[in-house]
Image (cartoon, rainbow, N blue to C red; front, side, top):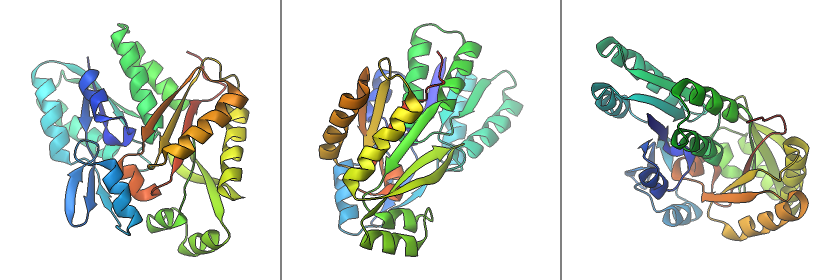
Length: 285
């Protein structure tokens, strides 16, 4: 069984090598050059360029990349599961579905399930990790698909950004909201609902925003004693350490999984982004 995902999962490059997961990189366009996300970008340099005023653009996985990679495994008679970035945030999922349909005309026995996780960043990454854990435990194909879809459905995303301008540039909030929010030190708290990015609350000041995010975690997550909390950040480890201490003191989770926000997601959220991921209190294994 072959597991596929894309770079919006924000997992480090070595993860894919070590766990036999096939990666489809989205692309980032920075200073007139194009790079494959995760494998072709130094993230510290990327965020430094953004701080200097660079305005990166992004593009989805190409149809050719999907076709060539899926065909290779179709020819070998493999079965696969592609754990995709939310269809509400990128066209990548729909392109994959279209290519899979084309390939089935040529390889009618090719077994490929494409899961729209409705997740992003390490929220999607934790879904990929769950799939790897289940595959390595020998869980059969259909059961694995069902369990992964259920896990994704219960994944919570709570995040804030340092600078509202990046969200405004990507059309996530209005330019006037970004301008006045910046003047007033307003920090938005956002979440992902049915795969879409939705503003949740506005809080004045970063410390208050972080404290409120942890309150929302407590409201939504229930008992954290057996949960791994994911944290992704836009080159801001200092805030990660601060947030880990706050979460530890209030919720006592089983552990943490920390990663940097990749270049594609980071192009839209900017340096200083802080995102927290966990399963909701209704999730059952």
